[in-house]
Amino acid sequence: QVQLAESGGGSVETGGSLRLSCAVSGYISRSACIAWFHQAPGKEREGLLGIYTGDGSTYHNPSVAGRFIISEGGDIVYLQMNGLKPEDSGMYYCAADSSVPLGCRHVPHPIEFRNWGQGTQVTVSS
Image (tube, rainbow, N blue to C red; front, side, top):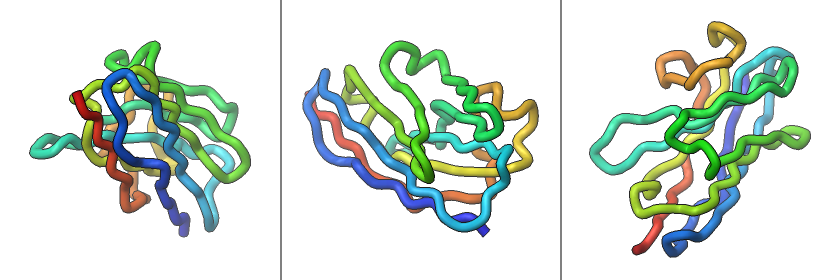
C-alpha cells in the first residue's frame, strides 16, 4: 500500500510562489500516475497536473499552463506554483494510482485515484 504526505502549503500574496511536496512511501508500481489536485472551498476537487512514473511524462490542466509545474525527485513529487492568484486558494492534494488509463496523459480526475494524501492548505491574499 502506498502512503502520500503533502507539505509546503502556507499563505502568500498575489503573484507569489510556493512549492508543494508530496512524499511517497510504501509500494508503488513503476508505472503509476501521481497527480496534484486543488479543492477550493465549496467546490469540487479539480485535477491540475499528473506525472507518469514509467517515463516521467507530464500532463497539465490548461488552466495552470505557464504557472504550475510538476516534477519528481526520488520519492517526492513537487508542485511548483508561480504567479499565484486568490482563486488558487484551497486545499491541495496529491494522489497516486497504477491503473490510470492512458498512462496519465490527460487531465487527472479524482475518480481515477485510490490513494490520497491528507492535503495541505494554500491561502493567497489579494
